Image (cartoon, rainbow over the protein chains, first blue to last red):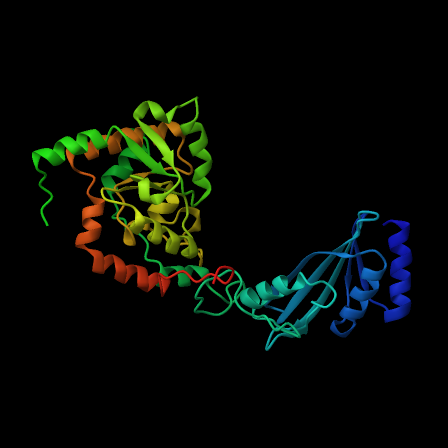
Length: 176
Length: 179
């Protein structure tokens, strides 16, 4: 881990209390924080040069019954990345928007709302972003079965089993 | 509807098969095989074929690879804009049975359920040699009067529309950035 990141981590810990730190790379570190401290930490990081929101995404941990929200911040000064992760309840998922910090978050939040069903308070624009006329539960949730949906919605092709043909291929008379 | 052709239609089909304009609408990853087919190595123009930018002047419609639900709406728009006679070539295994996207919530599994397909090219992706095999076969089919997908579409319009509505909900395209 770079020295500047270490210093920043110490400062964050002083401000927001202890949290779990996971070093991924020399220039990449992941921190797991409580959800009420996320906005504070993001604001601090932004003011310390981590001004680029590379990605805001979500992971569905169905066994823990939680969603993990992940913010990836990038610094253009030293090329380092901070990955800020937080856990929210899977049932009735809600979080606050970071649109006032990064206007681009509007679209990331729309996408997460569309694919995971997470509501972002403060973001007034929760229209679907990518899918058209979606009619099921959000598709990237782990309890959504894409195969079943595909079978129901998009009929496939039926094939008749041709035993003789298969035997010929199996014996090597024909190229399968 | 009978598919018998008059002598004039036979002559026209003969001429048509030798001058075909292919709509340049690349729907999936199969589009990468088209630049080598068009350019000097395989040289599509020796068959009298060329790329065409708009559907209103095109004869062939290539569905190159998977079709997402969103793209299918645009494909139906495009197909219906093309003037008769029009021929559709399904390209790669995704158009035949869904290919590796058979269990995707966003891509359809077979194209001939929504628009008529005259010819399929199997493979993931088919090489330019396979594409040329298919084009010469399509030319033969046009000369023999076997490429009649566009007639079937008119004849079974209700069936196709009903399938489209069943999978898409609505064929009309809504677009927040242009409305």
